Length: 116
Image (tube, rainbow, N blue to C red; front, side, top):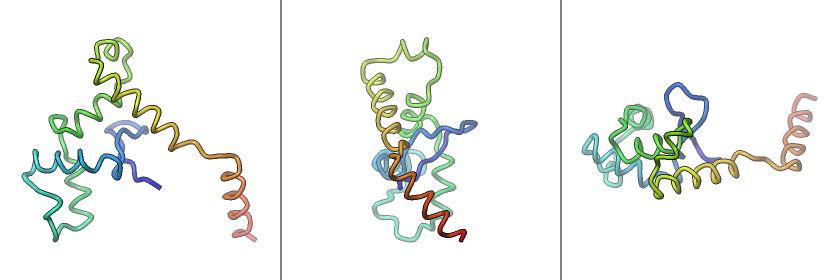
């Protein structure tokens, strides 16, 4: 299952650690001067802290701002490219968060079996 990170003050997620990794790499390079592809010694805790500290001026910050925009008036002012970013995220995110009825039943049955 993909790992999602949350925007500040929100319960909704606006980027995916796996699908957006190239943007995360670019953001680390821009803000910290760290090239993740050649970084061999970074611990997960440090990576997570630095990821959480990325600012809105990075490529990831730009995507989060677009994907997380709630104000319809501001969304109407989006460029065509920004509208595509917004709608692609909504479509992709909805597909990832929906679970089939069969999957739900299977999980519930496994939980019931575990409690027996």
